[in-house]
Length: 269
Image 1 (tube, rainbow, N blue to C red):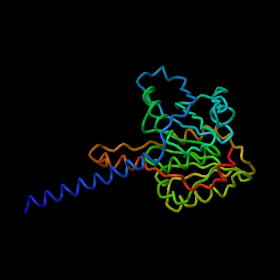
Image 2: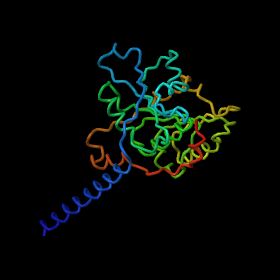
Image 3: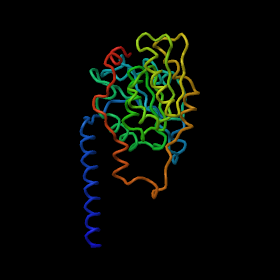
Image 4: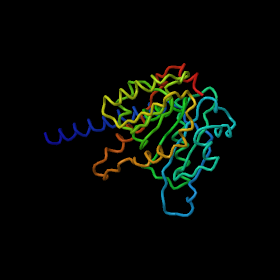
């Protein structure tokens, strides 16, 4: 009888593993893996400390910087200020989204992150994402897809689906939006902030009074980067971590064709 119970338990366990494996295979296959071109900025002291690991910011541009001319990413936002000499204690990765795509169309993040992490000394517990307009939508979407990947995010004048709140409550978030934005109304951010506040998530909301859609000067706000640095993914002892296959599923949740309003992306700059 003891052997029978042991056999049943083992069979149930293997069945559960197979179900999770199949679900993971379907999820990861749902989005095409691609590697977008990107601009890379290193901290001024990167070579000075050969043993130090550095936090990473992924910056997502708006619609008008899409295409094949990588230099157009520097037209505004964080890459613009870095080009003008801004100093930061972060590795900054600024990918370029192709025309006809949005930041949630394909799995570009994992190939780009893997390449950067292979070449550079990356602090895996301090990976952040910020973005404006279409990039604000993308910041919400990728945090929803991989809530265990980012230590904190900052979406600018974007929006998301309130049904994502359960996932997004895991990610500290600072939202920026102009009250006079006619391209993407501030209500798109307000509904997300309210949903996350209801869940007692860590959420900040900067309502930029009288400002329109172009709020890119906020990327020169050092308070934002100080706030990001306060957040790090907690690393549990290995005996407290979930089983590897369960952790993998949780970290790679894929949403096919996220239910964002197309008009929000179309009007994004």
